[in-house]
Length: 211
Image 1: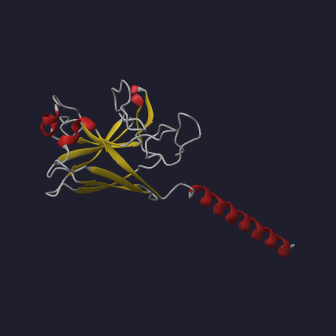
Image 2: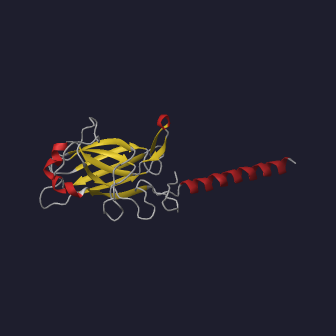
């Protein structure tokens, strides 16, 4: 009887280990990182880069156990330009780069970091926070449900830097709530219409993100 009980317990332990292993495989199916480009807000392109250069902005996000690490890299910008980096709910560009018709609102927005180009017009900034598949905000007091911010963009910190391109007024996208216009932003997936911080979309159209 003792021999049989011991064997039974061993079988239970083996089964439990097997279940844990399968669960581990299921949770590890998400990609370990995501990389994507940001795209210029074209009316202000000449205010972003010296003549003859095309500015680029790229993003790499590495998935972590408790939070993720995002690295944003800018190249070939004008020197000593300051920007403010946000994750936002909506992009004003469609997947093919054309403007979203009637666009009025970036939706939920989270201030993530400042960026400033060096004397050569390049910059790199890194942040650590919840990003891939789960970044969201909500406000129960105003009945705002959990709302994902799967897009990444950055705004001119100083409205005057965009004035030569015709910008007037200001936007709220910096710490003083007195920023310039959008400079660069991500584009949605053509099928799901979700921003690139979602790496695990559902098969529905429009898609939702599996957290």
